[in-house]
Image (cartoon, rainbow, N blue to C red; front, side, top):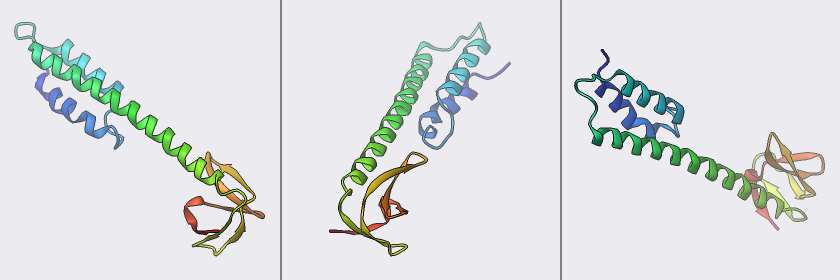
Amino acid sequence: MIDPTAFSTTATSAPSQVAGQGLGRDAFLKLLVTQIQMQDPLEPMKAESFLTQLAQFSSVEQLENTNLQLSVLQHAETTSQALLLIGRNIATKNDGVSGMVQAVVFDEGQPKLLIGVQQVDPGDVVRVW
């Protein structure tokens, strides 16, 4: 017989592990279902414990949705900032590349500033004029 309290410790830590590639929504739900299936029928899980775990599941799902929305927002902000540099002169820190930004190209979904034939990471820009 599996001890249902063995899962509650794992379930409690699930929300904090979502960002660090720990337990996600699917694993958390599987643990909860397994815990319910394996409980002792003579001593079922208390309603408070069940509701607590359902609330934790909801929190995990909300955290995943928030992380996705923040990622989309960050990408949009990075792209917007890169587009604002078109037609401006820049200098970079690493390669010493400088010149007018002619376009923004995307390399694996990340914006790169095009100066002549060189692609520059917007994070390397140290001067704009």
